[in-house]
Length: 342
Image (cartoon, rainbow, N blue to C red):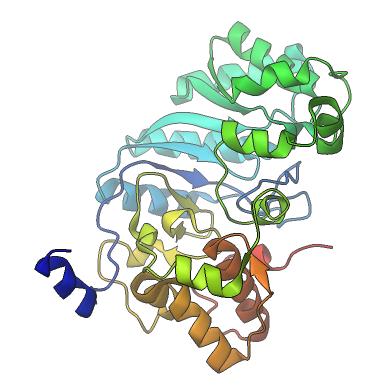
């Protein structure tokens, strides 16, 4: 180990987190969704707040994105097509702000017939959208019939839109099943064997956050609390990652794909105030060990015996803090993320 590296260990980086440049990302236009997929990073479901992004927030979000050096975004949710008028408004504002829309994400649940969706799809083209990302996975198929997914893909082709199937590797898995019905993961396991969930994980990128943690807990090995704290002793510098960012309908930036954490867009571009963002600051400098120490000392946090990943422990701590105090409301947002149904 070089002398240099040693020094670094004794004097940790105490500079505040600054999100100074955005590379690539998207707008979360709503957390409402027709589905409640097991792998959802944002814990979207039909019961989530039926709110869609308004014009004022859209404009302010786009100005921020532009000022931090990013000129193209994707649009996602939730399900953006649940409020088509609002979606068109967002697209028009993107055009006004000269921000290109790379694609809109959709789960195809709103497809009813080719005749009805083609006119809608044709309204996207003059508003600068040439591609739909259409979700395809066993998680989606638990809630959305594959016939809708196929129908929307065909309608896009007829309307002159490109399709970005995410991911096409699962199309073959759907073949044995009736496309006019939904199918549970249990059915996929029965068909493809008990290792199917682990197989999904190899084929499909799943972020360890939100509802995905509950699914991953049955797929990944469990480790003791101490093993997790030892294994993840480093600061959470992924909070500074901007290669796949999101800003939501409340004007909150989600740092490092850590759903349930929020930095208001007006605080981007300059050093984060540790008084306003104590938890994010703690995670950025001390990682999960720092957050765990705070939770234990100040909130009498009782951990589980085991976790799959530091992100699961972090989510558990944040859920407890969100329920016990309003001290961190600015950064533990949106609140509904922590109010797990059922």
